[in-house]
Amino acid sequence: MEYDVNTRNVAVLVEHGTNAVFALDYDYKNRYVYFPRYNIHDIVRFSYPSKNRTLQIVVQTENLPVGIAVDSANDHIYWVIQFGNKLSRCYLDGTNVTVLPTLSEPWVIRLDASKRWMYIVEENIGISKSRLQLAENQTIVNFISTPVRCMDIDTDENRLYWINYNGDMKSAKDDGSDVKTILSTNVRRNYYAIGVFGSYIYYTISNQLLMVTKTPGFTSTVLYNGTSLITSIFVFNQSGRYTKLYELLINFDDDINLSKQGQTELSKNCKKWFMNPKLASGVRDDSGKFYFSP
Image (cartoon, rainbow, N blue to C red; front, side, top):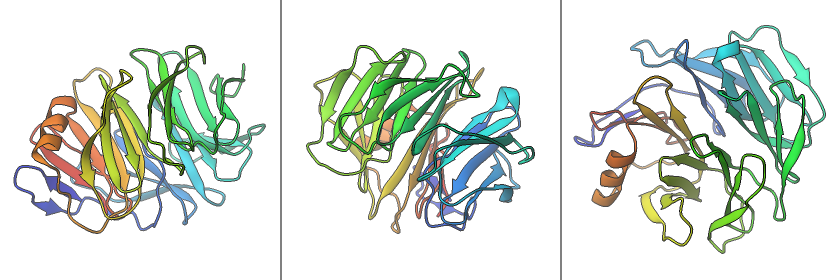
């Protein structure tokens, strides 16, 4: 759906046809949005920006795909499945599927494309760092509270951010050193969504979207209250352009209702957002519009 923050008009963007989406990524070169459908067991895409946003099935996966990453430079998609012990890869059109084993229950994939590194959250172990075909694979962060189901990379400052089961938001350098605690929610639960952009961290607790500065010791701001679980946030920086894309996969049934403070903070800190009511996707552009898929 498309949601205009100024007029609050809503229009359909795309129907994804699933009850759960835990990740989304963007093909910068060909301008496609990719995401795995958890209970349908496939990866789909649609063209964006485009007036023709037909959902295309790219590849069938094994049961319960959760994490995805797009490598536009090499025309690859990577994905992992829940309870699986491997990483799968294919071309952007779904051909030439390759399976790379030796992982343990991976959940999140993040790429640092400029340095050709891959970071994978193994939810009950830690964060591993490897080359794109799992060469030089090493565990750089060991979790003390599990499972961990969200993680993001700040490539500007070369740091990783994640939230553990105890509700501790952690940060470390991209080699695993200098671990810091940004904040503690003091709530034991699964945390599914975190995204970093500029000076801020965006994350979710259940049905709430919150924002906090990357500097430890500050209080979070609630930007949005939904009616059910928010499952993913993805921060996107389109190389060579000033636009930023925030992608939220949200499961809710009511209309978006941001406070004036929330709208001001969003206007300051992003150009585009993807949101997902009913596990949706949406985008905020310079005109103040949000796009999301129910």
